[in-house]
Image (cartoon, rainbow, N blue to C red; front, side):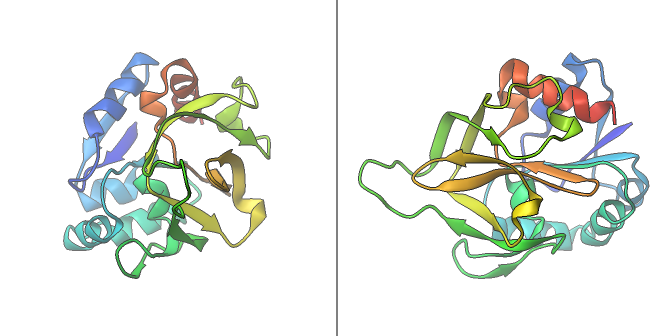
Length: 201
């Protein structure tokens, strides 16, 4: 069973429906005990980092998420769920993240002709072979919506980069943890293939 963390921030049903499309069962769950014991965990998210990390704390979800991520079981972060994995975010202040991947979350710099948020289809450039990208072309396009991006301390944690005014990490992979800045559930066939790959772990 794939468990999708429900902390009140994210298009949970669309993620669940995307898994259903590829024949995988996924449950939406806010129960800390079930989340800690999940066989595969999804941390989605849409919105502000500050609100998200506070919601996780308020609902006693930080410890079970960390417990799962550190257990070696498959873990997938999506969009804000990627950013929450890092040490610190500088979105409207400075806020401590889950600290599972060393690095920070920063805003795109204002540049002439560059619209923020970064919204729409863009290409990834894979930097590593990873089972979650099996069967997906190295320069596939995925759907993005974000104004902030992650800057990992270690280049080895980056699974793919994307260009948007700068070269940023659009996907990370560290041990059992993988996470994407783009939305697989909004990325049509390529996104469904990625979710199918995760479901088969």
